[in-house]
Each structure stands twice: as structure tokens, then as C-alpha cells.
Length: 370
Ligand SMILES: NC(=O)c1ccc[n+]([C@@H]2O[C@H](COP(=O)([O-])OP(=O)(O)OC[C@H]3O[C@@H](n4cnc5c(N)ncnc54)[C@H](O)[C@@H]3O)[C@@H](O)[C@H]2O)c1
Ligand SMILES: [Zn+2]
Image (tube, rainbow, N blue to C red; front, side, top):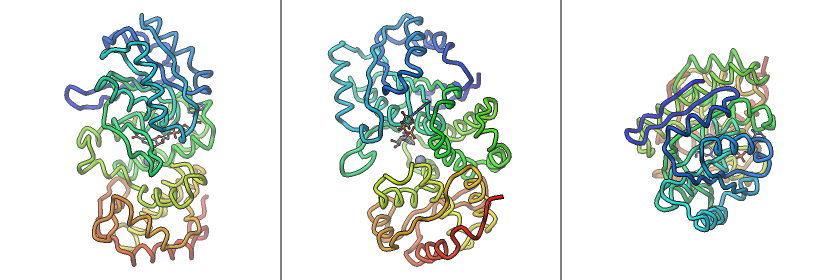
């Protein structure tokens, strides 16, 4: 089993990564000195697949689990679901040392984390992420929260788990499209921090897609290490952590324009990363090769990198509404080379429009996968 430590002083915690490690959870739990009561938060599908295994580990560790099932889906990432969990915790008289366990993808993790952050001003919580997005991204770093009807992730708190328990075996049941979408965030880590890791993905993407356990463990471990490093340096996104938004400026705009229906988050990020790199190369910030390699690896994995048809003025309007805008200049994370990015605050309308236009002129022709 691999271990990545997130260093945050007294709030430091371990991310344990392995294959078929569900059955070792009991031993680890005993070290955490939790109260007896635990709430296991999950959805019906994940419960059917993995609920018993975790439940048995909890009881074997001497804990008393209560299962809370939420319907699956982003549209249930709401205060209403949070309330449903509060009701149960209050009825069952959960105390300050009672724990919350999130068993599921990023939706379950974000909701359960927010409950843990706020119930009795904070109870311990454990993440058992089951989607690739959750394993490499959402379970690590302590951003918790839910959506508001006026916008995504508007209600939330920074609150760190006491443990993240990652079994890559569960990716076998994850729908293929979810696996591929999750790879966008993995590629992102290579671009922002580590060229060697980017090359690792280029060399090993076939093994990843074939769910080769050793490759998956290495990839998830490396991703968690990179995210943990960034979070340890800047827990509350006052500076460095913003580099994790590489690909997300245009990614979010695309998700908004298409009403969060057409693309999975990772799919939009893939388009956004290639766009940001292309724009950077047009601005002379990085070599054209950088953008071509990101585009190529995304496409080889099965991610679309084509900017969808949209009116530039709609995109511009959405970017203006975004928190990343100062004085009508848009903030972007752009690559300097593979493994190093910088944040630029002065992307103006002309540069953007010029890049959008070039995407429409060259879409699908410039860099065919091979
Ligand atoms: N907190 C953060 O830092 C952070 C970072 C990235 C994303 N997020 C949030 O995470 C959410 C997206 O997460 P997601 O992509 O995991 O979506 P998700 O939680 O909706 O999971 C995707 C689908 O896969 C299913 N699933 C999950 N694991 C499975 C498995 N092992 N086998 C079979 N099916 C499985 C789920 O039931 C769901 O239907 C969004 O709400 C996003 O805002 C948060
Ligand atoms: Zn993301």
C-alpha cells in the first residue's frame, strides 16, 4: 500500500492507495480514535457494490455505522441533501467525535465533507473515493460544499478529512466515460507541475485504460502527491493553489454555455487545457509543441479537445461574470512549458477572440491522433 501525507500541521492526514485494500481499513480505523457512531454516506449504486465491504470493516473496528443513502447525481448536491443527513445525525445523537464517511464519487464526497465541516462545528470525516475524479482530485485538499440554484459550489467550507482511503480496484465498475473524464485532471497535474508525470501518462495511457492495477496505483499516487503538495503550500487558495485551475477558465465557460448537460467536468477541462495552451503559444509564452502534446495525449485517451460551436460574445459574457475577472481582463493559468505554469491576469478580449477563431479554423485538422 502506498501512502501520501498531506502536510497541514495538526490537520495533516494520510492518503492510502492500493489495490484490494478495503479489508485493511479496520486496522487503520483503530488508530484514529473515533467515537463509536459513524455515518456512512453513499448512493444506492455504490452501496450495492461496496457498501457491505466497508460496513463490515466498520463493525469489525468496533464502530456502529448508520448508512445514509442519497440519490445519485449532481442535482442532489444541495442543502436539502445536507439537511437530510443533519436530521439523521441529530436523531441518532451523533456527537463531536462521531465520524462521517463518504463512500462514492465527488458528489458524495463534497456533500459528506460539508456535513462534517458544519455538524456541531466539525466532526471527523473519512473519504473513500470511488470515481477517478474523486480519487485524484476531490477527496484531497479539503474543499467541501454544495450547489445553490444560482450557481455551482457556491456554499462550502475548507475542511480536511482525517483519512483518504483509495482502492483502485473499484475503478473496474466505474463507467468508461467517467474514467476518461477523470483523466483530464490527471493530465493537468503533469502540465502544471511535473513533465516526467506528463510523459508517464503519454507512455502508459493504454495500461490505464486497461485498468492495469500497478499503473493505476502509480498514477493515483503521483496525482495525489502533486495535489497534496499544492494544498500544503496554499490550503485556502490565496495564491499557488490557483494553478489547479489550469484548463478550468474555458472549461467552466463551456459547461455553463451547454447548461452542464453536454459535457462531464473533465471533458470540458480537456478542451479548456488545450485552449489555454494554444492561447499561450499564440502569445509567445510557450512553444507550440506544448499545446500539441497536450492535445495529442487528451485525444489518445478519448477526450475531445474541440471547442464547441458558440458565439464568442456569450463566452465573453460568462467570463466577465466569473470571479477570475479584473478590469475586463480575464485570468488564465497558462503553461510556460510542460511541468510549469503561470497565472496571467491580463488576457484581453482580442487575444481570446483570436484564439477562439483559430480553433474554429483548425479544429480537427491540426493535430490528428496517431
Ligand atoms: N472538492 C473538490 O476539490 C472537487 C474537485 C473536483 C470535483 N469536485 C466535485 O466532484 C463532483 C464530480 O465528481 P465525480 O466525477 O466523481 O461525479 P459523481 O460523484 O457524480 O460520480 C460519477 C458517477 O459515477 C458513479 N460511480 C462512482 N464511483 C463508481 C464506481 N466505483 N463504480 C460504479 N459507479 C461509480 C456515481 O454513482 C455517479 O453516477 C462535482 O460535484 C464536482 O464539483 C470537487
Ligand atoms: Zn476540475
